[in-house]
Length: 231
Ligand SMILES: [Zn+2]
Image (cartoon, rainbow, N blue to C red; front, side, top):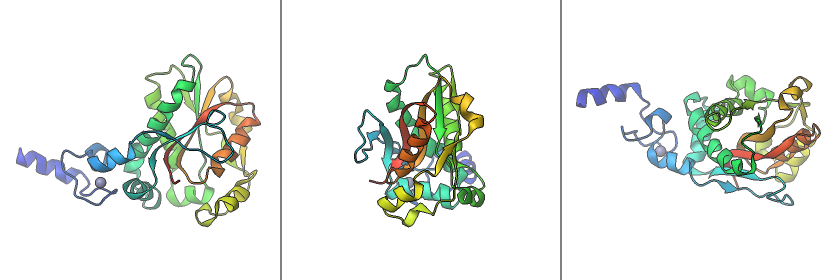
């Protein structure tokens, strides 16, 4: 037994990217994080309220607060390219999606629309975090829905500044009118209920811009599901 566990240890990462503790065989090895961090990331889904936006009008749900281990795990995926963490972040967004499903008719096809990465982030990371998350979530939802598609219809139509150092007001200005929908993807949205997917809500300006762009297409938008929120 000891020998087997030593072999398992060799094959798995040694420490949790959320808290830095050494991973034990009871930890969530397949997700590469410890049990405690998995619990904090996959907590209770909660409504994220934006000023002036009614909960029923545009519900936004997140599963974890962007702090402590959850923040460390997202940063490890985004800044240190730890792609093995994508499923555990996707699971947090999936929990948020599930709490939106009571608004969704199971007989009507569903579309998950990922928030697009900034082109420079895509270039430096080499992968699209949110689109990959949406793909994993769609695979899971197909157990409940006959027809679920990821439709990456949103695109940046102009250069936007890095959001990380901007105030809420500056973010809103920076993003105003910055997203558009790709004509080639419009047929894929037709007749579908739509849930926007993102990794992190910071001020909500990106989600509101996505909503604006999608509304112009007459989209049947049901809400937005995010892994984490920072406020
Ligand atoms: Zn941990």
